[in-house]
Length: 351
Image 1 (cartoon, rainbow, N blue to C red):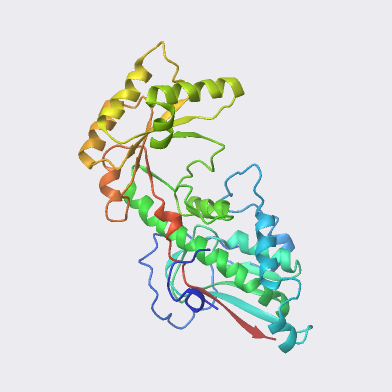
Image 2 (tube, rainbow, N blue to C red; image 1 turned 30 degrees about the vertical axis):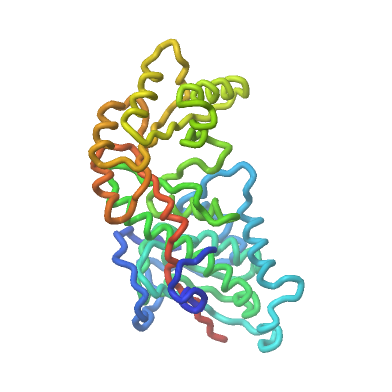
């Protein structure tokens, strides 16, 4: 099974540690003959129940109410409903034991390795697994980077859920790596434009790819955007109301203010510079859809008083120039809302 068989190359909506290298251009061309799983040192097969207890190479971001275990449970349940895998039940004896491998059919950054182990544990804790690459490592087209062994029914039940998460997360991590490298010295951020129900895995993949996380949701940072400014009567009113809310609720949240023009930058700077006006929680100014010239001017005006974030028209073609304006961060919804899944397949053999 591979991304191509489910999405025909369209965007999916959805241990051994090797030296990290920069991934080459992702391609969907037919993979060359698979190379054996090899590494500098041998790693024994381990039960998924044991492997899942290890700390992930790159930890998932924190969310106060989201559970990855619950997301895995939902993904598995929607695949079998209250019936089961009738394809396997009808064709494969229950006692059949198989070996399976994961094959990279494109170059990229692996993400979802630890999540895959968690999925295998949820399906069958006795399935044995070993990875030659871990989250954040480069995988190359034609490379076998994982081997697992266990009941064929268990492997096949986990197959599509493992691949759906891993292909999407690896696609996000691969694009993030490219954009983060190009954006330096600015840091790359994603947005809230994630697949509903998959925000944490999407944002986890951004971290694996070398980016940083923006706010997790509406609950952990106040972002005063154009609509908030319009509805509250202006930048000054919006900031005053936000500061009052934080004082009343004793919240440690920070405030980001969106600006679209240099005039609006001047407005927020006048508030920051006014010692009689409380802007103690204002930590960042967004420069939204500004020209490179205006962004450079805005960064000079702000002069490090707060962080700056460039947003709008961020692509692989534009991100390097944006990063040279001096902004602290660059955010791009494209990292998660229109990513191309990385082509990976699972191939099974029977003992």
